[in-house]
Amino acid sequence: MSSNPQGASQSMKPATAAKKLGIFLPAAPAEFQEGVVTREEFDSLRENPPAWLTELREKGPHPRPVVAQKLNVTISGLARAGITEALTTDEIAALLADRPQWLQAERANMAAVREEARRVKAEAEQKAAKSASAKHGAAAERSLRGGRHG
Image 1: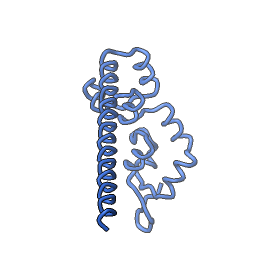
Image 2: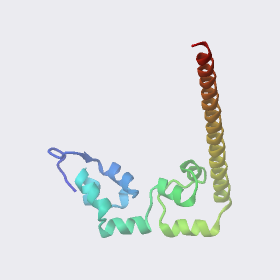
Image 3: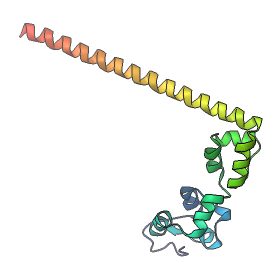
Image 4: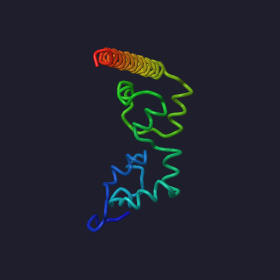
C-alpha cells in the first residue's frame, strides 16, 4: 500500500478500506494497516484479491457488521449478547449449530423488524397509489367539466 498520500488522485485510510472490503483491520497485514490505500489499489484488491485477503474473508476474524450479517442479527443484538469482538468463521458456524437462546431471540427480533418494515412499505405504496389515483380522477373530472364549458 502507498505510504505517501500526496500525489495520489484519491486515497483512503486503511480503516475505511478494511470496512469497504468487509475485513477486520487488526487481522490484516501490517503493510495494509500502516499505509494509505489509493483508489487504484483498492480496486485491485477487490478485483484480484491477494491470498491474505481471500483467507481473511473465508476464515476471519470477521468485523462485527459481517458477524451480524452472517448470524442474521443486528450489531446491537451482538452487543446485547456480549459479543464485542471479531469472530472467526468457525466460531460463527459453532453459534449457528448450537443456536443459543440469545441467537434465537435476536433472529426472531430481526425477522419481526423486517416484517414490520415490509408492512410499512406496502402501506406507504398503497397510500401513494390511492393518492395518485385520486389525483388522476380529479384531473379527469376537471378535464371533462372544462370540455363542456368550452
